[in-house]
Length: 74
Image 1 (cartoon, one colour):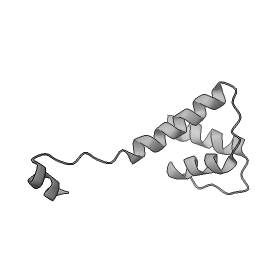
Image 2 (cartoon, one colour; image 1 turned 30 degrees about the horizontal axis):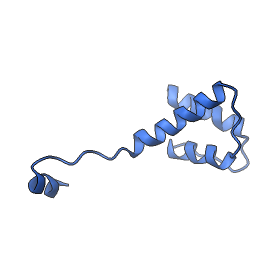
Image 3 (cartoon, one colour; image 1 turned 45 degrees about the vertical axis):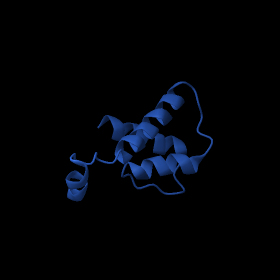
Image 4 (tube, rainbow, N blue to C red; image 1 turned 90 degrees about the horizontal axis):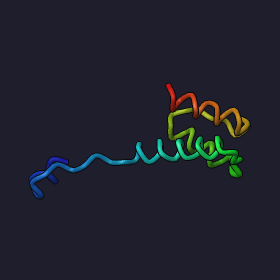
């Protein structure tokens, strides 16, 4: 990454992947709180995995959402 600074005169901005994944989780929780039901359990599991949670395909989405909520608050 130092070569970017040498070429452009400024440092490269850090990747926004973590912010994006966190925002996906926040959006999911907001949708659930307003009465939405996640239609795709695989999407819920994907969000949880990106937050660093281990998720089984056999876990109920409600349980995974509770764990996501805890990860965001803790």
